[in-house]
Amino acid sequence: SYELTQPPSVSVSPGQAASITCFGDKLGGKYASWYQQKPGQSPVLVIYSDDKRPSEIPERFSGSNTGNTATLTISETQAMDEGDYFCQAWDSTYVLFGGGTKLTVL
Amino acid sequence: QVQLQESGPGLLKPSETLSLTCAVSNYSISRGYYWGWIRQPPGKGLEWIGSIYQSGTTYYNPSLKSRVTISVDPSENQFSLKLSSVTAADTAIYYCARTIFDYVWENYRYAYAYYMDVWGKGTTVTVSS
Image 1: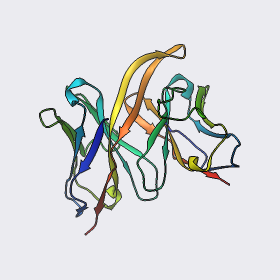
Image 2: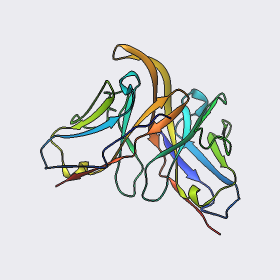
Image 3: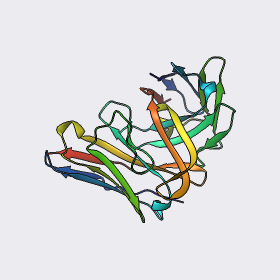
Image 4: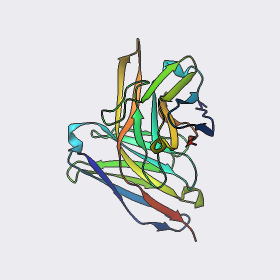
């Protein structure tokens, strides 16, 4: 069965860029989305269709998807960006989520 | 803006059927979009359960398909989830979400775009004897 693999954790200093990867076989042939979830809150869509950003999401969030890896990049990371991030894609007839990455802003 | 609100029993016994409803505000389900359910066990990641179109077309997670039914009620502007024969493993926060699902041309290729753009606050369901 198809799987999406994310690193369990990523750490970044405030003001630096953070990159979170999502690996899946030929993932570049699918569209990847990304969700941010803060403790006790519902997930929020931050990137869809690989690199599209909902209007309410800050410009520092961007996405890419080539080969087997989709990447969420947060430029100039802020303390408010701490949380869990999940990638997601559609495969054949169902939806997959990655296991999630905990982003820590040190 | 569109709002979704889950409701249903918070405590079930093993073997019972989980029944949840998602009420949609400020948008008519009949106008389009898919509508889906996602769950999150305590301290774990997200698991997609399934989704439904206003016409009744459904897609389900293969691992849950034998126990899941999602239905839509346009007259009440809500959709529902039923999960039968629950066990402790079904203990989770259950979210409903508005879903975009389309076959599109983006970034020089055709593929299915599927993503959830509006989420409810979630409702906690515990299965315990």
